[in-house]
Image (cartoon, rainbow, N blue to C red; front, side, top):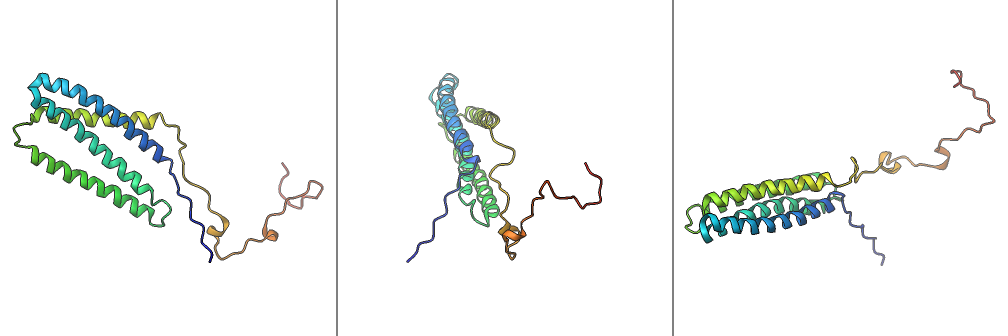
Length: 185
């Protein structure tokens, strides 16, 4: 009984970038929660603290859904349906974020323990903060313009043609006469 070799998992070059963006965004979100808690307390006591914490956390959750969906979609890189799977997962996550935002907004709309202005303000500050984190992480990453790509093997380009040693181009010896009629360089 022979076992077929398992294909090695492929790590795309975007994976470390997304993981780093998630880590830095988590740190920024914790800092925003601390600052928002203090500012919220001075604005509207503990109601302001709760609102600032929820607004900041919502911004991070929305960033995390997008990054996690891309990381999950990257796992299907070896599949022939990678493009379809990738965009299905990422667009599904965006739809989930949209529905989640609507549901949370409707649930928190009339709650007495929420200050809507503080919640919305820190949600906006958190979204802008996570966008800044994304820009900084991506701009400081050294990545080639073309990554995760390679030239096809001859069997992939011409699958029905055998490549034999006699079909390889022959190198010209320096002692042979050049029979071409074109101008000599």
